[in-house]
Length: 151
Length: 158
Image 1 (cartoon, rainbow over the protein chains, first blue to last red):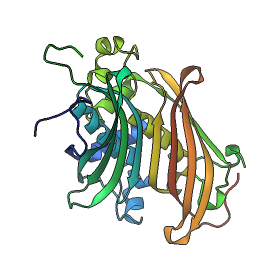
Image 2 (image 1 turned 90 degrees about the vertical axis):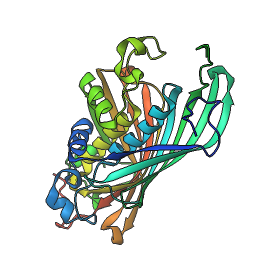
Image 3 (image 1 turned 45 degrees about the vertical axis):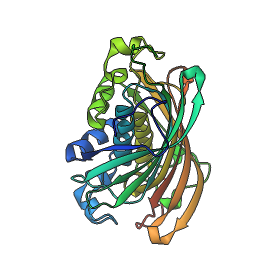
């Protein structure tokens, strides 16, 4: 199945995703970006004595990587990202490799945007196949340009 | 209780009250935006190509929504510190773009608190918003946060 990015190309049930290793550098930079110095993210000993057993990655970091997976796949057809929901089901540690999979859940045409609103459902799994985050996303998507390059 | 009654980084579950307000401000610089593009892996023209972005309805590169959500989360980290034990669920609606050099003001308000000894404290539900230049509402959010209880005796209210 070829890549589909425009509103008119997306069908209910169509899925796509990517896989990313969350490194210590991701975590360190995210802490700086978000001004987030919670010990669970920055202190090995605090992480070891927590219910997670070791340090965890900031949730917004992984959620952001998941959201970007949508944007990359849609490749410019996303006019605006309206909403995102994240439900955290398990810890994500530095060193984990997460795979993000999004599925088209519903479509509502919006002719004034030359496309429509698409609701996506997603899941992040760690390298053991465990679901660590469930996701929902809503975006305005334009139609794919036609062969003449016109919208 | 107002936020001035609690020292940042020390807000434990016993100190949390419905109606409590937690605030923070941060200037979103171009450096934030470049770094965000790198760690999220998002090099879409809208975020990294100023010429392209100038032709869009935004007029310039906007900050990624995920960056703003992270900054809002950072305000919670600032207040709860070591008592922030994890996010259960978060919901964010993006209302308006934030451009480089805007100072964003985040305001969270405690809506519910649910003690749960099995979690070592309880669950706190907060509603939040992030406003940018000229008080424009950029993000509305709601978060369910696990907050730890203090084990060091009475809360420090200094």
